[in-house]
Length: 168
Image 1 (cartoon, rainbow, N blue to C red):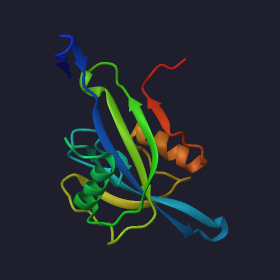
Image 2 (spheres, rainbow, N blue to C red; image 1 turned 90 degrees about the vertical axis):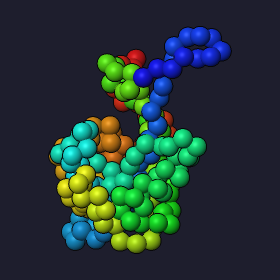
Image 3 (cartoon, rainbow, N blue to C red; image 1 turned 60 degrees about the horizontal axis):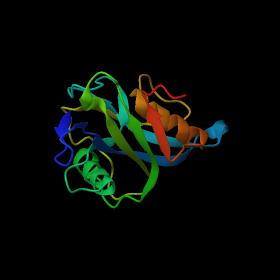
Image 4 (cartoon, rainbow, N blue to C red; image 1 turned 90 degrees about the horizontal axis):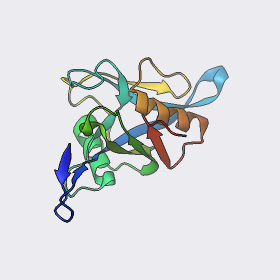
């Protein structure tokens, strides 16, 4: 997607922004000790990455909305939870190279506390909602989200990440 820059008259591509929330919790896994779990949803009927596991709450940032506000709104709309203690995880610039609509900037947050019990609010778009250990994720996970989850698991997630680029 592109727009005409009124100052230069040149066509410029538009970046689509989105916010993601990974709910995290610590649980006792017996002989494995304490493990970090993440809440994931199984996407369905969305037209994008259906039958893939994904962040329990995510969506586009609307005009005039901050990334944090969008994350809180999506958590309420998709999981019926509020009062998230959001922590910034990473910003990801990504591309798919073929369509201008595939130029994206995603803001990823984690939350370890919130109010309410997460539940499926949009059953037409979400087939399942389940906790998984970060070191034992289901297959398949949305590819760019898997990059973030792996960085969270390792504990070395950079504040700026990329996906789909041919980096030198």
